[in-house]
Image (tube, rainbow, N blue to C red; front, side, top):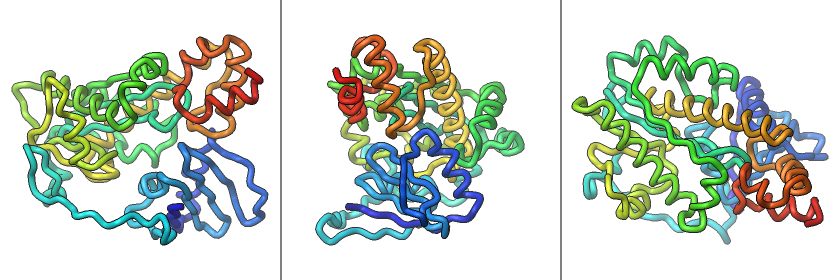
Length: 320
């Protein structure tokens, strides 16, 4: 099992607790401040400030919080080292970001909701011209994980007034229709590409100096899934994990995604008559069970991503 261990300060621990609030699970360990489970990853925050991520997606989840985590892997499951591709391949640049990139005019994209059982998958792309960077910074645009949900919802309208953007919202019902044909990575590739394509058409004839995708898969894998798309965005394309830390375009896109996700989750909660949590913890199992008891699988299909393991857990709880 992959394990990633970080050391966090009091402020970051507080941010983590707020971020994972809907995914908290019980932990009897007296040294643990709290434990959460998100999309197969167990996050345990100890009172000492040590944070342990365990599970197949541990590295990716830990990467949200720190640039260089301490990684410990068992010998049995340690992945083999792969060659790192550099330079350009078919227009897709897989190299490191150029010097001064944060000050370029960039179109950036990000997504929210992929790891949440309830709520939509939202992808957004933002064009941040170098002339707007100071204004975005003055607004308070930064990594959305460093902002509260209240701050995010306040920032989103201001961002949409300041810069060109494109949002795509895939409701759970639509998600469930296409998911059998598209795995999670394929779906995100399609959505990022579509959002960027639509954004570039909006700002034409202006062209960004670069396009930055918040990396969720390897550039080679992204390119593979892109082959079937009619309008491929590949020119001046860069990938980097935690892209919101490298350019405000991605940070702004992340905020728009999160704000839209929260809004949709709130609407769905009002519609179904119960508060739908974000994340994929045990609380989601309990709420899903109540929805199943209320309207069966047809009702749950409207609000949850059915291929998550939560569905089978909820069926057992509901006795259906």
